[in-house]
Image 1 (cartoon, protein in one colour):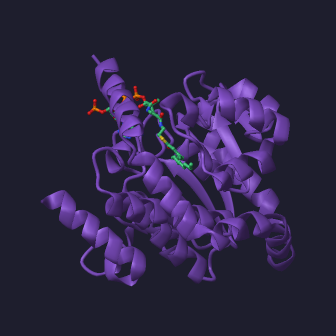
Image 2 (cartoon, protein in one colour; image 1 turned 90 degrees about the vertical axis):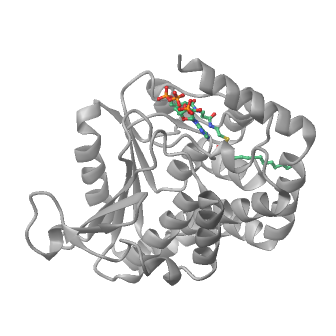
Image 3 (cartoon, helix red, strand yellow; image 1 turned 60 degrees about the vertical axis):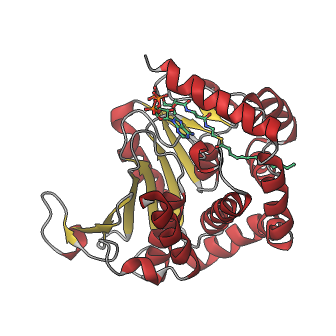
Length: 303
Ligand SMILES: CCCCCCCC/C=C/C/C=C/C(=O)SCCNC(=O)CCNC(=O)[C@H](O)C(C)(C)COP(=O)(O)OP(=O)(O)OC[C@H]1O[C@@H](n2cnc3c(N)ncnc32)[C@H](O)[C@@H]1OP(=O)(O)O
């Protein structure tokens, strides 16, 4: 009951994002720990914490949907709204995206959103996923992913839609698109993003094998731009940000658009068909069975 109303609330917010601003902490600012002036005030929602620094024009956006930042409908909605809020505020030129959950950047799709759910719910969920990808991939802001934990599947896609990726050097923090290992298939726009980042042959191999790359291999294949000790991820992300912000915004933004528009347009042209494909695919009995089995395996692994 509570979940259903939460989902309805999130869905309304996707259509009318400002609806979520009422009655939640989103849009409300509060002093950041140790901060004083306007530049140190933070805002956010239940699942996304935003620490804006007006002086530098950079905000740190932290995913906090414990235990593993699985992309629930609510988290997707709140990410879109937080990003939109920063984009509409001309004070900000860049966002560092990172995790507030220990050891995990983002575990990808929240499998409970597509296991045992009806087609209407799966469709609503997938539209929210498309929306987040379109918003991040085409964002006018510089987006730097400070990857401080494991980054499989949907988590990897969020990182790939940023302009630059810094990964913490920990062998447990693997990154990649492992969909095939779950018995599912990455949609074409996810595949396109992979190809745009690491090239056709490497994508062909990694997608089919469902490879999750440890840091050194991720760097070698070009999936991330820097691998640094864990305690230097944030400072390195800030240095990268400075490098990107040294370029005049209009020239960088137009160039980004020139590089990415065709890929995004491909989804925009067939968004409904992509949703239908997703729904009919994940609602198949055989796919539901493999997703259930995968979730069960994850749950048992714990003990
Ligand atoms: C013809 C056209 C067809 C189109 C079809 C399109 C298909 C879909 C396309 C997809 C794009 C994207 C897909 C995805 O993102 S699928 C999700 C893939 N994610 C994973 O495989 C990651 C799974 N998780 C892990 O490997 C680990 O949890 C970890 C490395 C992220 C963290 O490890 P650890 O810290 O040890 O935590 P636990 O494993 O103990 O997990 C804690 C808790 O969280 C639950 N959980 C983990 N991941 C998920 C998840 N993705 N969704 C929901 N729940 C998750 C886990 O079950 C534990 O739960 P608990 O036992 O109840 O506490």
